[in-house]
Structure formats: C-alpha cells, structure tokens
Length: 295
Image (tube, rainbow, N blue to C red; front, side, top):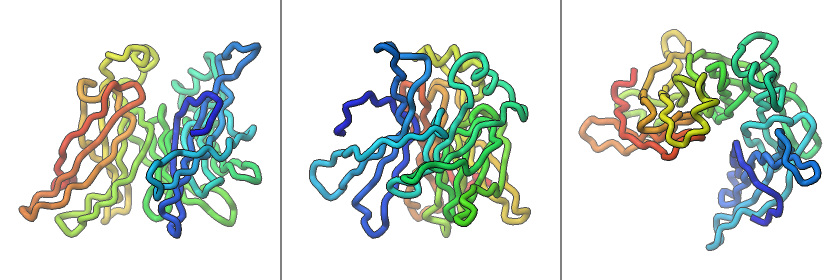
C-alpha cells in the first residue's frame, strides 16, 4: 500500500470515472493515534487516506496517493465519494472522549444534535449539513441521492446535493427505532419478475444500550434485525418492513445489510442472498430470502 504510518480504518468508499472504469479511487477513514512523547492518547488524529487501484494490471495494488485532513473533520465516521479528491465525511460526535461523548449517544435532544456532514476537497472543506444527532453511515441511494444513518437515534435521512448552494438538501426521513449504522440501496435487476423489490436496506441493533459491554466480548450475542424500506407508490411515503430478526447467534450486532440478487429460475420464484455483518461480529451471515412477498 505504500504507507509508513499506522492504518486503523473505519468508513470506506470508492469512486471511478465511467470513462476509465478500470481505475478505482479508494477513500478510507484512518484513525491514527495521537501521540505525545510516544504515548497514544485517548483520541486520534483522524484523516482520510486516498488510494488508487488499477484493475487492468495482473498484480492489483492499492497505491497511496495522499492523506487529506482539515480542522472541520474531527470525528470522521464514513465517506461518500464524489471524485478522486472530493468527498463527503460524517462527523459522528462533537466530543472525542469522556462523559460528554457518551451523553451524545444516549440523549436525542437539540443540545446533542450538533454533528454534521463535511465536504472535503483539494481546496479545503465546508459543512454541507448540520444539526444532525449522530451522523454515521453514508450510502449511495437512487438518482445520486445520499442516504444517512443516525446510529444512536435510529433514523434514516435522504439528501440530495445542491451543486449551486453546495449544501445537502433534506428530502425525506424515517424513524426505525433500532440503532442502525450503514445504509445500502438494493436495485432490483429483475423488476419484471413480480413486483420491484428495490429499496433501502439497513441492519441495526436491538439492544444497543448494552454495546459498551458487549463490544469487549468477542463471543457476546448482540440481537439485531435487518429492514428494507421503499416509497409507497400510492401515498409517496416511505414504508418499512423487517426482513430478518436474529438473537445474535447468526450475526452478533448487525450494522449493515445488503441484498445480492439471484437470477429468476423461470418457476415464478424471486429470491436473493441477504448478507449482514457488524463491527464486533466474528462472522458474516448469509441467508437466502424470498423477494416475492416483501410487501
């Protein structure tokens, strides 16, 4: 990778130019330790690492191009790539440590809704969305939309980027009542086979209040569930449906779920693979699900 500094990754995303589809830029949050006299401190000197990968060569290597940092990016969690050196970054906390940081997770008041999303680029950085509670995982939605998970609050928010005002414009919002993290969007490649199953897919914790204890136990069973969300064609409002609920034996603390389609067999069945995992789970869970009767 060509890096000589510590690499403690968190959120990642990729960007590629359709005219050069074999050239991929990888963006990754790097929580390198903040050192004083060689001793790591409770908070890190987080930054964004930019890599380039050439998929045409036989030996594929992630070449490190540069590190990006800015004083507006202080608790980066996830990334939404807009270009090789242009990206959105969530700051998931205001405080880097201590009881005040814990209070940000437990309280969903206006006082704690102070996290934001920053656009970081070669010319600097600016805040493009603010007043958020626990701005966490970012995902790519349909038609260039940006989807955001409020991990502690359990909310999904959908934004569009205003290229003129250089701000994120809130388009929709839905409360799920679980502690979620990284949203994904499933595009149904076989909409003609029954109903269109496209939708937002989210994994979340059912007892996240105990995460501070269970995250230190690799064998803990953290219950979780995976949901799919779509827009109702008649009302235009977002609606949710639970795909799966687990006691932690399948995946301990699912924070992300994604759907991989299975080509219809011509017998009228519409199925897919549901993949889920979490930051503290020892395994990744895979299960075959039916898409015929989602709604």
